[in-house]
Image (cartoon, rainbow, N blue to C red; front, side, top):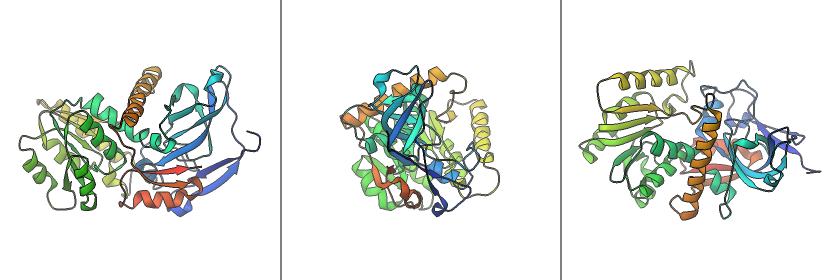
Length: 343
């Protein structure tokens, strides 16, 4: 480790991407129960796009290092950690802190990445894959032969979600702009242009009896349409409020409104269910259960990558110091998959 230096990208406040700051410092030291990971890949997710606007509902106070997840190699272990973890490639879900060359993580929170899976490929299924897997299998509990609607089917989460649904024998209708329709058709998805007129009417044409599940990251009015599109016994999984990314006012209000709607819908005498999915749910109350579930689900995702059930969609790879450019690209709406930052 001798000559290594810490390089990190700091979000100093509400800034344009060009306002991100690159800082240098000393590589952190592993304390008891911790490991130091040398980052090999970290991602630009929708959360960072919200955070730079001060719109992510539980982001820390500025300044901080963003970066929701990472993949890298353990280079140092603290007291009480198995020393043979050093030299292992691992993945970790962090919420913040991943946009750095070296990151300190609790050893209990790392998941080994199997041989034969590259760092950038593995990175595409950490946050996005866990979100997709848990919504599909733990919330909606999809079964072969069902039909689901995926909003933003070309996005980071959507890309993994449609592949996992396909692997489970589920028919997928996916919203995206026209430029992504050909790629979606190649994946077996029936594409719907979210910019053209009435999306709900088009989905009803494709699934007259309703769909068995909807995965909605848009929030706002979209989530009400999503609820109405459900077949009896169907499940709505709302997992964000992308439509309020550029809004003003309270960052908590859009999420509280979604939670309120979900509560009301579930209180109605009907056979449909609604959930607001948050990847961190349950961690505060049952940390070990949360870790066990994360470990199990991420291990399944890495297996899906190896078997080819999921193909990693790396939209672009850029070095960490070009995080501003990576953020612009991720926000452009022109890409499919995940923008990955490397050392």
